[in-house]
Image (cartoon, rainbow, N blue to C red):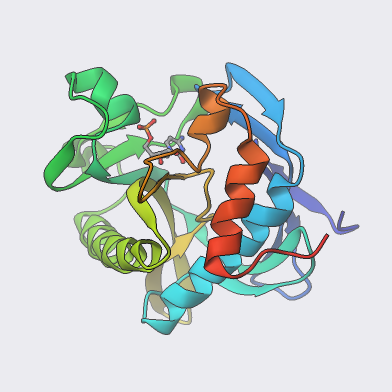
Amino acid sequence: MSRRRQIYEGKAKVLFEGPEPGTLITYFKDDASAFNNQKKGTITGKGVLNNRISEYLMLRLGEVGVPTHFVRRLNMREQLVREVEIIPIELVVRNVAAGSLSKRLGIKEGTHLPRSIVEYYYKNDELQNPLVSEEHITAFGWATTQDLDDMMALALRVNDFLTGLFLGIGIRLIDFKLEFGRLYHDDDMQIVVADEISPDNCRLWDGKTNEKMDKDRFRQDLGNVEAAYQEVARRLGILPED
Ligand code: C5P
């Protein structure tokens, strides 16, 4: 692990000071948590796979003009990212009903949604990341209407692009969570995709069998969690060597 000054330790990642001002190093751990930290465990090799998968997806998004915080992967478990001011809103995009949507609204898991649904969650562990509306977000100053417009536009582009990318390798993108940050340069501010994009924060189902290839295998004790993450990496053509 990096010998640099630690800035923050999260459930699945550690953030360190980067080599230059305005950069950070993200270290990907094997630790997994679910249901707002009520369930904890370790998925051997997860950090290595998520580092690699997130690198790949952030780079592909960059190529189609979606700005992200990603700079480059440094080694098996670390990547260099731009330091951003994280917006305390988790944005979830859903194409097919699953997880908390199915539970909250009684919609059968697997039901194709008539259109993609975007939800906002307030990023606050103590409050267990509650679902919030645009009204809450702007009233409490967590983000401006302009920030939300930018985040929504980026999220829909990410959804279109990733849906196609995964479809091409026989995987259905059911839903995913994105985080965003404000990147400042001179007098300018740009909203960029931050955090990670990996099977920890996407639901990915096999296109033929609908088998789960994501963190739901850990959440629901389905077994073969690492093998599922590896299979996602393999289909993306990026399986890291042992
Ligand atoms: O649990 P729920 O159905 O709301 O999750 C929707 C999507 O957001 C899933 O892909 C899940 O992995 C992701 N998520 C996340 N971090 C959270 C909550 C949900 O990555 N704190």
